[in-house]
Amino acid sequence: MNSPHLWWYITRASAIVAWALMTLSVVWGTLLSTRVLRKVDNPSWLQDLHRYLGGTAIVMVVIHMVTLMLDGWLHFSVANVLVPFSSDYRALPVAIGILGFYLLVAVQGSSLLMRWLPRRFWKAIHYSSYLIVVLVSFHAGLTGTDVTALWYRIVAISIIGLSVVAVLVRVLAGTKATTSRGSASVRSVPDTTVSDTTVRSGDGLATGSAALPLVLDRTTMRVAATFRVSDEVLGLRLVPTTTDLLPVWHPGAHITLALPNGLERQYSLCGDPADRSHFDIAVLQTQPSLGGSSWIHANARPGLELEVTAPLNRFELEPAYSYTFIAGGIGITPIKAMIESLPQRRDWHLVYVGRSRKSMAFADELVARYPGRVLVHASDENVAALNFEKFLQTVQTDVYCCGPEALMVRIAAAVPRERLHLERFQPVERAAIGGPQPVMVSCRKSKKNFDVPAGQSILEALEQNGLPVLGSCRKGVCGTCDVRVVSGLPDHLDSVVDDEEKDRVGIMYPCVSRATTPDLVLDL
Image (cartoon, rainbow, N blue to C red; front, top):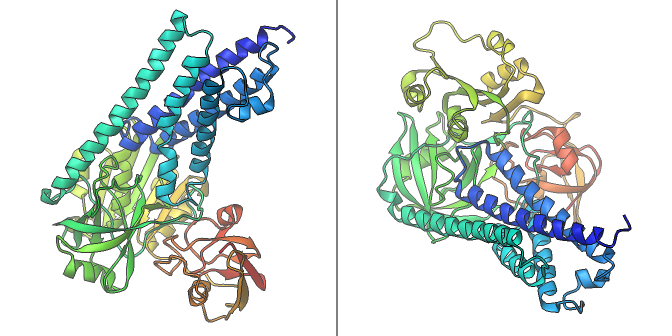
């Protein structure tokens, strides 16, 4: 460990590895955002690899900086590796490298905090990844001692070449999306269509992503086309009224529509996430309607403008070797999006039940596209109901289910919790022990304190006291109104995610949940 050359060798190696990892992270991020790899494997696995590449790059840069200080020839100090222009050794190239390091930390940090950051701010930071590669390339070329070596030139050309390819893919994908946006209104039928009913959310038994507070941007979108998915389902294609690309989304995500009649409703997204020029949804005409689906079926026409939130996902597809999908009625819509996101080699099977084949959206299409993988069970064609309990005894896969509550209860009773993922249309009946109790709510940031009587929801009290929290379903299923809890114990009465998961990340849904303690402090 005392060899005068040891630290110099580690410095050179860590620098090259960090440079390569930064470039691969940028390239991988580009492939993810353009969905070039959508047929390769599960989106969650791809995103995990993207994060690992960026995180490992930071680790290698830190090693590079530490070994520079340990090297006996350069005699770098802590200030020399952290403060631009404090080094006498090639001050400008070193300063460029330091700036690239700080940008890398900002990008990686914004990825960890993206759930709390405004999307435009997060995107602005994230796009600086391309600048990082440029800065590091200049830093490497102007400070490296091996720049004249053949192996170094090969590595440098390869890395820079990958960077150029990433930029070209990003530009070409953006141009293609912009072009398709202009022609979206003339396409009457989407590649795949979406969801339905009045409320959508991940269930408390889901084992997907942690529920963290999100900043949901709103934007105005225009109905470009409407189309019939079935006798009771109307499809809508929504395009942005600006030239911006729509946010990245993954199967299972939903958006919230603010309707002109004052209601807000959630509908799942479907289709190809790579095409960010439009959102496709489909709306089931519920009977009786609470006012959302009936208004859309009666009034949705091309040219209608609606306020739409950014996609939110409480029912995300998690990596697994094999899947069993169970859909009831209109619950097929998020399931269909998941199926179409899987690579061809992935093992999966679908059980699809409904009243009649005529009312079952996509039934014939799915059977034709995936022979041997899809079982359709229509009640008007079969006297006996499916015995899910017996069927699931032999299933050892991850199970994803969406449909009526009666179906969800049966599946939840037959599948171990660690393998079960549900999305409910309606909340599970939950009540506070001893009935609703008054609670004193304190808001740490705004310094406001107020009593919430037993007959009023905490969400209503927040709105009444000038602290508007975005709420939509107000039933505890959509996950829109999440707030961070500073102190006090929430009494979780929602059906969004598991109670232990909410406590772990420190959030609650104030539309229905209350508190088991007299006081509750919120980060508002």
